Image (tube, rainbow, N blue to C red; front, top):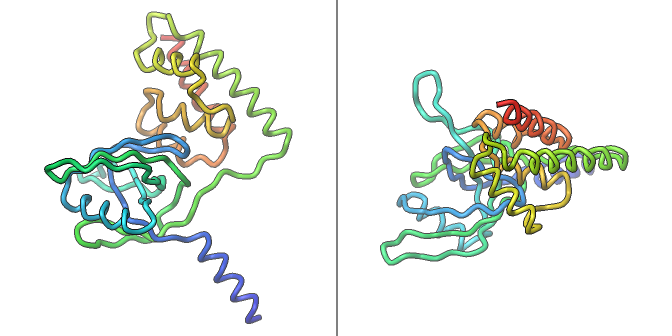
Length: 218
């Protein structure tokens, strides 16, 4: 019984983690670069501490509640700091890369910014057949994107995506490609958050394809 409790505690410690939080009205996604401009004093302090430690922090989106106040969302992305340029006035330009997603279990204030205990959120495991199915859906979405570019309804974002795809500057796997599209496509805030929360590449690609079909009908 004692060993069972120890294993349970060990499993919980591996799945739970403490992160400083950056709260913004935008989202970051796994395996997608996310450049940032850090200028608020509280986040400058947080950044200094991150650089002295494990060089990562969590980013969560926010929205207005029924009272009109901003509140943070519950699921975000861990960002890994790759490079930092500190400006003369103390501001910083940082280059980060999206890592694992997380769900906030509890949070508290620390010197003006938020800290949180989080639990990691990963995609569900897929069978070989499901991976093949998702790769086929991914190819279908790519074909739809190319067919949309050039139409009158196409905006700059879709043209930019087509250019990146023609230059092979996008991830090949269906899992990473779905996050890449979520980061680059001009989607609604609700859909962007749903894509972040989804633990199924198939669901993410299906939702993106559905959104693109609406563009095609406009």
